[in-house]
Length: 239
Image (cartoon, rainbow, N blue to C red; front, side, top):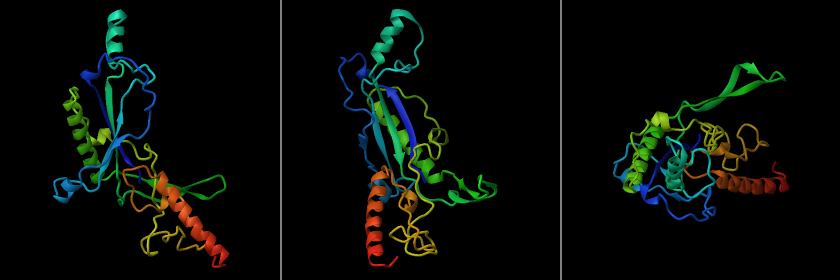
C-alpha cells in the first residue's frame, strides 16, 4: 500500500502584488487540514470509506523557472506579470488512506533470478475504486476552496489522471501484515513471523492498512516496542 496523492493549485488574485517579505519559515512543513468527513461517511453521503487530508502550499519561495506561471510575451510587461504573480499561488496536496486490495501483493517471479540464481520478488499494484473516488472528491473540494478564494481553476483532471503512481508518495507499507493468526497474517503483534520464530519484521511491512498521515512515526514506535519485547525474550531465554 501507499498513500494516495494528488494536487491542485491556482493563482489567487487577492495575493497578487503583495509586499515582499521573508517567508522561508514555512517551507515543506506539514501544515495541513485533517479529514473532516467523518459525519458525512456515517450518514452514507460519500461513496468511499476512510479519508484524506490537504497539505497547504504557498509563500514567497525561491523563484524557479515556473514562478510566473504560464505567461506569454517579453520585456518589462512580462517581467511585471511575473512579479505580480510571485507568491500568489496556493496549492493543495492531497494525501489519503489506501486500503488493501486483491490486486496489490508480492510474489516470487517464476523466471527472473538475481546474480546468485535466487528468484526475485515481484510486486503487483493497482489503485482500487475506493482510492479513485477519494481523489475525485478531493479535487472537487480543493477546487471549491480555491474558487472561494477568488481563483480561476478550470476543468479538473479525472481521478485516473490526477492520482500519483504507486510508490511515488513513498509511504510504502504492507505485504507482511501483523495479525492474530497465521491464516491471515505473516507476523504476530510483535512483528515475529509465524513460520520462523527468530525472524522479526521491524518496518512498515506489518501495517494492515495505510492511514492518510505519514507512517514514519508509527513505524519507529512499533520497532521500539517490538525490540523491547524481543530483548526481554532473549534475556529470558525464550528465543
